[in-house]
Amino acid sequence: MIINHPLLGPRDASEFTYLGDASLINRPDWQADNAAEAFYEYGYVRDNPAGKHQELWFHEAGDRSWLVVTRDTTTHEISKVELARDVARARGRSK
Amino acid sequence: MHDLVAITALGGVEPRVDTIGGVTCTEVPGVALASVAARIGQETKATKALAKLIGVPAPGIGQHAGDPVTAFWAGPDQWMIEAPFDTHEDLADQVKPALGDAASVTEQTDGWTRFDLSGDQIPAVLELLCTLDLRKIETGSVGRCSIHHIGCFVLCRSPDEYSIYGPRSSAGSLHHAIISALRSAL
Image 1 (cartoon, rainbow over the protein chains, first blue to last red):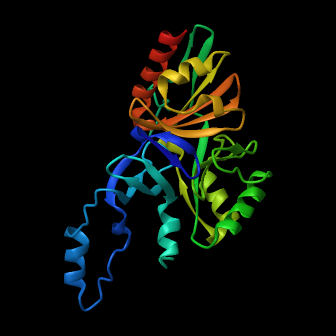
Image 2: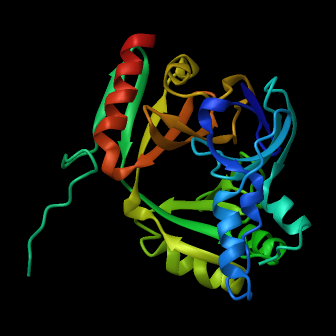
Image 3: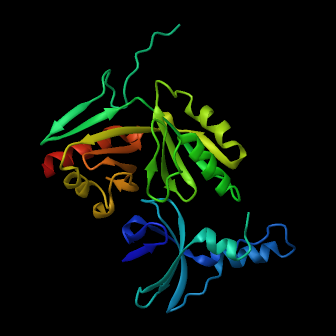
């Protein structure tokens, strides 16, 4: 599998490590009233789609950037690769 | 007062030099290093300050630039600065005032070891060592990659001169990997 790194171009998947669902970017507010419930869902509840899936990959043997890869879990076709920080900032996470 | 003998990363008093099949691998201990990471929202300011420091525009993705103080791209908005140890022993302290609050600067000198390859068949050696796309590498390129599971930087100074940076604590393993590849390829 080849991941088309947004900065470095096509790189072999062996250079990357997989973390999981890209929803991990949306870490709940630990000070919120419902923090316990929110962290339970953040830590344990996942969709497991057969099809398009947004996931976090780390370019460990490369520039060490985190990527959000949109991949079809049934065909392994990768339709989109973005820097995770760009995705996080687009969702309003500027810190 | 202690009377300590300075040794290189490979443990020698003099830097190790190996010549195999027309390519020479030289241990290069005399380098000072510091890392620069631009702070959020300060990327443009940091890039400009870095350009002023090295005297040429800050290197872009996968590039290195500047002499004698060289910056090479390490990741998004991150660079490594290298300079001769003799003149820049306190490199991080020299870089920090230049970057100010625009970036975080960290001393890296003794964290890394450098091996220089010189000769005319280096790509044949590198293609055994790493996954970098060597057809895209030219003078001024830098790539971060895994060599025998060791995270390294590979810098192309010219088609006949490359530098490899790896963690100092793995200097022996990295040297073994390079020498094995030299013997296999040449």
